[in-house]
Image 1 (cartoon, rainbow, N blue to C red):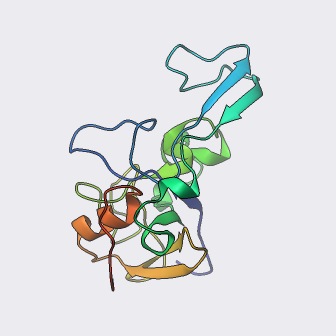
Image 2 (image 1 turned 180 degrees about the horizontal axis):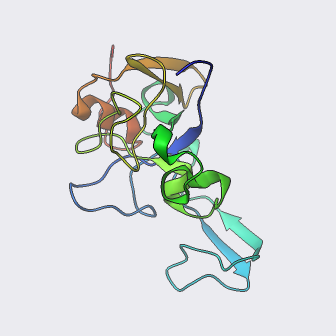
Image 3 (image 1 turned 90 degrees about the horizontal axis):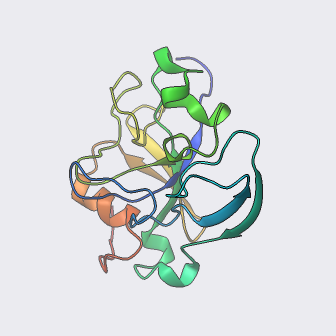
Amino acid sequence: VSGTLSDYACSAGYGPAGVWNWITSNGAMIMGEGTTDPPTVPAGWYAPPLARLLTWKSRTSYRSLVDGTSSTILIGEKHVRPSRWGIAQEDGAIYNGDHPGNFSRRGGPGAPIAKSPTDIYLDNFGSYHESICNFTMADGSVRSISVLIATDVLGKLTARNDNEVVGEF
Protein backbone atom coordinates (compact mmCIF):
# COMPACT_ATOMS: atom_id res chain seq x y z
CA VAL A 1 0.00 0.00 0.00
CA SER A 2 1.56 3.27 -1.02
CA GLY A 3 1.26 6.43 1.03
CA THR A 4 0.36 6.79 4.67
CA LEU A 5 -2.77 5.11 5.94
CA SER A 6 -3.73 5.10 9.57
CA ASP A 7 -6.54 5.52 12.02
CA TYR A 8 -6.23 5.32 15.76
CA ALA A 9 -8.30 3.81 18.54
CA CYS A 10 -8.13 3.86 22.32
CA SER A 11 -6.88 0.85 24.26
CA ALA A 12 -9.70 -1.07 25.90
CA GLY A 13 -7.38 -3.70 27.41
CA TYR A 14 -8.33 -7.36 27.12
CA GLY A 15 -10.67 -9.80 28.79
CA PRO A 16 -10.99 -13.55 29.25
CA ALA A 17 -11.18 -15.53 26.01
CA GLY A 18 -14.71 -15.42 24.62
CA VAL A 19 -15.83 -12.76 27.10
CA TRP A 20 -15.73 -9.05 26.41
CA ASN A 21 -17.27 -6.10 28.18
CA TRP A 22 -16.39 -2.61 27.00
CA ILE A 23 -17.59 -1.06 30.26
CA THR A 24 -15.72 -3.16 32.83
CA SER A 25 -12.60 -3.90 30.78
CA ASN A 26 -9.10 -3.30 32.17
CA GLY A 27 -7.98 -0.83 29.49
CA ALA A 28 -6.79 2.71 30.11
CA MET A 29 -9.69 4.20 28.18
CA ILE A 30 -13.01 2.43 28.66
CA MET A 31 -16.59 3.55 28.32
CA GLY A 32 -17.63 6.20 30.78
CA GLU A 33 -21.04 6.89 32.20
CA GLY A 34 -23.22 9.43 30.48
CA THR A 35 -26.77 10.61 30.11
CA THR A 36 -28.36 11.66 26.87
CA ASP A 37 -31.56 13.27 25.70
CA PRO A 38 -33.38 11.11 24.68
CA PRO A 39 -32.06 8.52 27.19
CA THR A 40 -29.80 5.64 26.19
CA VAL A 41 -30.87 2.03 26.36
CA PRO A 42 -30.82 0.59 29.93
CA ALA A 43 -27.28 -0.81 29.63
CA GLY A 44 -26.08 2.66 28.64
CA TRP A 45 -24.16 1.40 25.64
CA TYR A 46 -25.73 3.19 22.72
CA ALA A 47 -27.34 6.55 22.38
CA PRO A 48 -30.42 6.92 20.18
CA PRO A 49 -29.90 8.68 16.84
CA LEU A 50 -29.37 12.44 17.19
CA ALA A 51 -29.18 12.25 21.00
CA ARG A 52 -27.52 15.13 22.87
CA LEU A 53 -24.88 14.26 25.47
CA LEU A 54 -25.94 15.85 28.76
CA THR A 55 -23.41 14.50 31.27
CA TRP A 56 -20.23 12.43 31.19
CA LYS A 57 -18.17 10.76 33.89
CA SER A 58 -14.97 8.88 33.15
CA ARG A 59 -14.42 5.44 34.69
CA THR A 60 -10.64 5.88 34.61
CA SER A 61 -8.07 8.50 35.61
CA TYR A 62 -4.29 8.72 35.72
CA ARG A 63 -4.55 7.46 39.29
CA SER A 64 -6.16 4.27 37.99
CA LEU A 65 -3.09 3.49 35.84
CA VAL A 66 -1.42 1.54 38.64
CA ASP A 67 1.05 -0.13 36.26
CA GLY A 68 2.60 3.26 35.45
CA THR A 69 2.10 5.60 32.54
CA SER A 70 5.14 4.34 30.60
CA SER A 71 3.84 0.74 30.86
CA THR A 72 0.26 1.43 29.76
CA ILE A 73 -0.92 1.77 26.16
CA LEU A 74 -3.39 4.60 25.72
CA ILE A 75 -3.92 4.71 21.94
CA GLY A 76 -2.82 2.52 19.05
CA GLU A 77 -3.18 2.11 15.32
CA LYS A 78 -6.50 0.58 14.38
CA HIS A 79 -6.55 -2.54 12.19
CA VAL A 80 -8.96 -2.20 9.26
CA ARG A 81 -8.67 -4.51 6.24
CA PRO A 82 -8.45 -2.67 2.87
CA SER A 83 -11.59 -4.47 1.68
CA ARG A 84 -13.47 -3.02 4.67
CA TRP A 85 -12.57 0.69 4.36
CA GLY A 86 -15.74 2.69 4.75
CA ILE A 87 -17.71 -0.35 5.96
CA ALA A 88 -19.47 0.31 9.25
CA GLN A 89 -18.65 -3.07 10.83
CA GLU A 90 -14.87 -2.50 10.83
CA ASP A 91 -14.17 1.10 9.83
CA GLY A 92 -17.16 2.47 11.66
CA ALA A 93 -15.59 5.45 13.43
CA ILE A 94 -16.41 7.54 10.38
CA TYR A 95 -20.06 6.56 10.76
CA ASN A 96 -20.81 5.90 14.39
CA GLY A 97 -18.67 7.13 17.25
CA ASP A 98 -20.87 5.73 20.01
CA HIS A 99 -20.20 2.06 19.24
CA PRO A 100 -17.16 0.74 21.20
CA GLY A 101 -15.84 -1.38 18.34
CA ASN A 102 -15.47 1.76 16.25
CA PHE A 103 -13.31 3.79 18.63
CA SER A 104 -11.41 1.20 20.66
CA ARG A 105 -9.31 -1.92 20.20
CA ARG A 106 -8.31 -4.95 22.29
CA GLY A 107 -4.80 -6.28 22.78
CA GLY A 108 -3.57 -9.28 24.75
CA PRO A 109 -4.25 -13.02 25.04
CA GLY A 110 -6.66 -13.91 22.25
CA ALA A 111 -6.19 -10.47 20.65
CA PRO A 112 -2.79 -10.20 18.92
CA ILE A 113 -1.65 -7.28 16.79
CA ALA A 114 -2.64 -7.91 13.17
CA LYS A 115 0.45 -9.04 11.25
CA SER A 116 -0.75 -7.87 7.82
CA PRO A 117 -3.40 -5.53 6.43
CA THR A 118 -5.53 -8.49 5.34
CA ASP A 119 -5.62 -10.35 8.69
CA ILE A 120 -9.21 -11.05 9.68
CA TYR A 121 -9.64 -9.34 13.05
CA LEU A 122 -12.44 -6.99 14.00
CA ASP A 123 -11.33 -5.32 17.22
CA ASN A 124 -7.54 -5.65 17.21
CA PHE A 125 -4.72 -3.19 16.78
CA GLY A 126 -2.83 -3.29 13.48
CA SER A 127 -0.89 -1.13 11.06
CA TYR A 128 0.09 -0.67 7.45
CA HIS A 129 3.69 -0.15 8.60
CA GLU A 130 5.65 -3.32 7.90
CA SER A 131 6.22 -5.47 11.03
CA ILE A 132 5.36 -2.73 13.58
CA CYS A 133 2.35 -0.98 15.04
CA ASN A 134 2.55 2.49 16.61
CA PHE A 135 1.16 3.21 20.06
CA THR A 136 0.94 6.23 22.34
CA MET A 137 1.70 5.35 25.93
CA ALA A 138 -0.08 7.08 28.82
CA ASP A 139 3.08 9.12 29.51
CA GLY A 140 2.78 10.69 26.03
CA SER A 141 5.67 8.77 24.44
CA VAL A 142 5.18 6.97 21.13
CA ARG A 143 6.40 3.39 20.74
CA SER A 144 6.68 1.27 17.62
CA ILE A 145 5.93 -2.26 18.81
CA SER A 146 6.65 -5.41 16.81
CA VAL A 147 3.56 -7.20 15.51
CA LEU A 148 5.23 -10.36 16.82
CA ILE A 149 5.07 -9.23 20.47
CA ALA A 150 3.87 -12.05 22.73
CA THR A 151 0.19 -11.59 23.48
CA ASP A 152 0.75 -11.94 27.23
CA VAL A 153 3.19 -8.99 27.10
CA LEU A 154 0.76 -7.00 24.93
CA GLY A 155 -1.95 -7.71 27.49
CA LYS A 156 0.24 -6.38 30.30
CA LEU A 157 0.70 -3.18 28.28
CA THR A 158 -3.00 -2.72 27.50
CA ALA A 159 -4.15 -3.44 31.06
CA ARG A 160 -4.01 -0.44 33.37
CA ASN A 161 -4.38 -2.30 36.64
CA ASP A 162 -2.97 -5.83 36.52
CA ASN A 163 0.09 -4.91 38.64
CA GLU A 164 2.34 -6.15 35.82
CA VAL A 165 4.94 -3.51 34.94
CA VAL A 166 6.67 -4.38 31.67
CA GLY A 167 10.38 -3.65 31.32
CA GLU A 168 11.91 -3.68 27.83
CA PHE A 169 9.59 -4.79 25.06
